[in-house]
Amino acid sequence: MESVAGHEILVGADGKRRWPDVVKGQLVAETLVPGVTVNEVARRVGMRPNHLSEWRRQAREGKLVLPDLSGAAFVPVEIVPFSEPPVEEAAVLRNTIDLIKGDVTIRLDVGISAQRIAEIVAAL
Image (tube, rainbow, N blue to C red):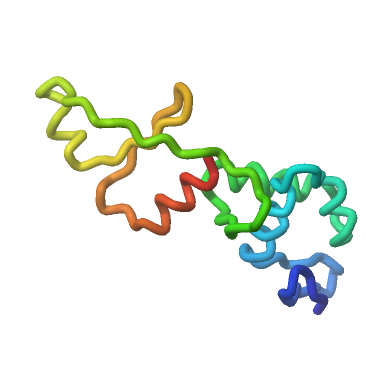
């Protein structure tokens, strides 16, 4: 066992480390601080930069939750007024939440948890 970012990392008999998601998120968040590079963070914890880059991809896709790290640069969220859709779309849209970034729209069911919405917004 070894310690990284204040968390214990399991090391298997084969020497491979098992990274908890909380540690992955912490390390990815550190790469979002202006002036900090993926190579720098990877070198500090003794891992390959491409492994850390893969975790960054997972975070962008909403598959990895990032902590609120002081100094990290996240994309701002813009809330715009809702305009009424055509009648045929209204029934579907009443039960959804749309997250829009550029020309990408992520449509979520209104029953989704606030935690999951926050994870997806952080990944965007």
